[in-house]
Length: 506
Image 1: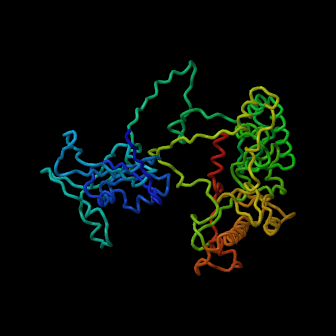
Image 2 (image 1 turned 30 degrees about the vertical axis):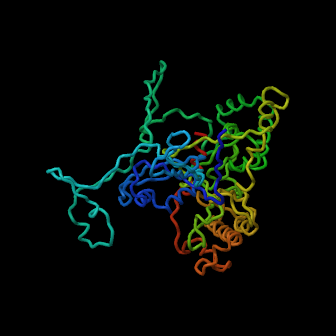
Image 3 (image 1 turned 180 degrees about the vertical axis):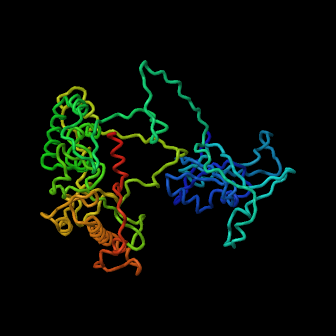
């Protein structure tokens, strides 16, 4: 019986990475430069979400890269040696020639990650000028600014060079299936096209029958849209929905104005059902000091000075060098970030979701058991921090919409209540508050946030330029001069979140 050898793995071996290079390598140094060098490959490897880019012309700014996708693998790198003899010899017993040599193998390491270039090479755009004789001349020395030049440099005559604004956004070819012609029913009328919508909608939006009110509108609605009542009554068929309806009625009874996040923190309801229940109890304010809030039917905050405490405050955490920290160093995440945007060429592999025994039992119970009509789990309920501001706590996001009554700080409430009992006029910017009340609140809240960040990350304020006295005036925190007054526009304020919410109800 022939014996078998055992290959042992080397100890303390660093992880190795494989790159399936789409070319014939003659110079390893040139090959690494096309990948950004060893530092560039290491930087890409440190971030699992990044793709490895290959530039066939690294010094050409117009070179479009090839992208490699990252895959896990279990591969070994072997070093195989074959020892050969110069002269062939024969076995004296059998007279047959002996083997030419022996083969030895050694494991150099284990590869856990591989980068594969699976896409096509995109179009490459070169900066050159052609002549009538068929010759070409490079334009890089004329179009690339390598050093400060005088004015005469920008007035010289050169060939027109306009690079394409974008290359193809896909690596692999795809089959495009054109939609067939749509056959409408008899009596179909095409949607009306206006100057605001020349292209038209791809599909009709699913209406939720919400009523929208502007600050300058005359009267507020006293009852919901009939379609909203019909739609909710059609959906409200079990005891859970009836209980949620009673809870919503109780919320608007004790407080006439709510934000959607505040309702989510006080009511456990599926978001799709919340879209149908809110228009049943309240209308939506589009502009003014109560913008992006839901107001109980029949209640007009413009005529009730006690509605001052329900006004909205658009607060954003300030960042910059003069505040001692930039946006990347803040311990508060952003709601949306361009860094999380993934291009269409990025491969997205679905991750299998683990199922728990609890989820399985819930799924079986919904088939007709007695527990199928239990109250929904609290996974739909938000935390109080999404709408309440407390001293000593950081907001969950960098941009927050607080109602004045939800700012639980005594010093800030004193600013709000400066004119209690003396409210005379309600305007679109300050509502029932004194002028620049929102500015004073933002300045004080920004100072509190800075003190919290200073205590959580003192290393950010160790430099002389960044460190400052905690008792510095609030005007410095605001980043604005006292004598400069910003011009107010009726629709002023952040509309990112408001527009996102509007899309759910239009």
